Image 1: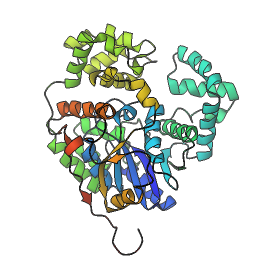
Image 2: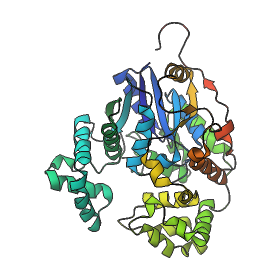
Image 3: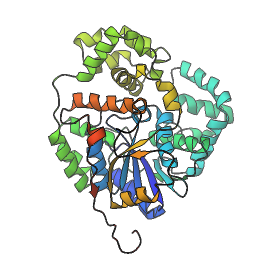
Amino acid sequence: MRAAFVICEYNPFHLGHAHHIKTLKTQCNPDVVVGIMSGNFLQRGTPALCSKFQRAQIALAGGVDLVLEMPLIYATSSAEFFARGGVGIASSFGENHLLCFGSESGSLEEIITAARLLLENKDSLDPLIRAQLKKGHRYPKAREEALVQLFGNEWAHGLLGQPNNILALEYAKEHLRRSSPLTLHTIPRQGMGYHEEQEDPTLLPSATALRSALAQGNLDAVRSGMPEKAFALFQQALKERKLPEGDPLKDLLALTLTYHPESLMTLPEARDGLGERMLKARGILRHGTLKDFQAAVATKRYPNTRIQRLILHACLGLAALDYETERQRDPRYSLILSLNEKGAAFLAHTRGQRSLPIVQSLKNLPREWTAPDVRASECYHALDAAYDPLWDFTHPLRITPSALTKKGPLP
C-alpha cells in the first residue's frame, strides 16, 4: 500500500484542505491518505478550537484515512522542528510513500534548490542572518535577505517569506538532511493567503479567516468555508465544550513567573533576550489580560507566535524536561487519533516495516517520552472541562467505515 502523508493542524478543516486532499488523490493516486496532525496545542502556541480527537474525526470526514498525532515538542515548535516531527513520523513507515504539502510557489524544484542551499551553506549564512536580525528583520525575512546576499538568487525574494513556502522549505530540508525515503510532492496553495483574516467569498478560505469569523460569532461565514460534513462535526464539537471563566493560561503563567522565574530562562524560545523581556513585563498579569502581556512583550524581533509558544512551554513546565535535546532527535512514537478501514489496513500492512511505535494508548510507553503530551492534555482540560485528560490512555479507537471492501483491490 502506498500512502500520501499530509502534515497538518486542521484548525479548523476547511475547503482549502479539502481541495488539497482531492488534488493529491487525483495527482498521486495513493492507496491511503495519512494525516500527521498536531495535538491539542498548535504551532503558534495556542489551544486548538476543539480537541485532537474531534479534529481527527473531522479530518476523516474530509477524506483522510488515518490521523496520527505529532508529539507536542515538535507540534508547538518553530518550523524547523515542526518539520522534524512530521517528516520523521512519515519516514518511519519506510519506502514507497509520498509527502504532499501545499506551497505558494508550487515549484518543487525551487523549494528543493533553496533547501539544499540553506543546508549546505549554513556556516556562511548564519552570520549574515544574524546581521539581518540586528536590523530588526524577523527570521524568515532575515534568512531570505542572507540567501540573496550570498548567492544573488533574486528568485528567493518571496519564496522564503510566505507561510506555506516556509514550511515546504523545512520539509525539504528535513527530507534532505535525513535522506528520507519519501517522495516529495507540492500542490500550489489556492484561495486566500494564510494570514488573511477577512473572508473573501470568491476564494477558498484561510483557517485564520475562519477563526476570526468564529471569534465574531459569525457561524454562517464559518459554514461557508467548510465542507458540509466537516462543519456539522465541528459545530457539534463547539457545542460540547465546557469553557472556564477567566483565563487559566494567564493564571498558570503568572504562577510560573512568580514562583519559578528561573525556569523560564531554560526554555529554547526564551533566547535572544525574550525571556528577560517577559520577566520584566510580568506585573501586567496582575491586572491585565494575556493579550495585554503579549502586546507589552512583542517587538518586531519577537513576533506573537514565538511569545505564545514560550508562554505555553512555561505553563506546561517543559523547563523540567531536556526539551532542547529531545526535539533535536527523531520522534519516539505517534498516537493514533482516528482511522477508517483503509487506515487500519495500512497499519496492518506496515506493521513489520515501521521504525517507531504507532500506538493506540500511551500507557505502555516510557513516562519520560510521553510527559509533554500528558501535560498538554491536563492543561487542555483546564481550558475545556469536557475534555478528559486520561483519553491519551483510554480513548476508544473506533474504526470508521470507508469505501474499503473485502472484494478486490483498494479504490
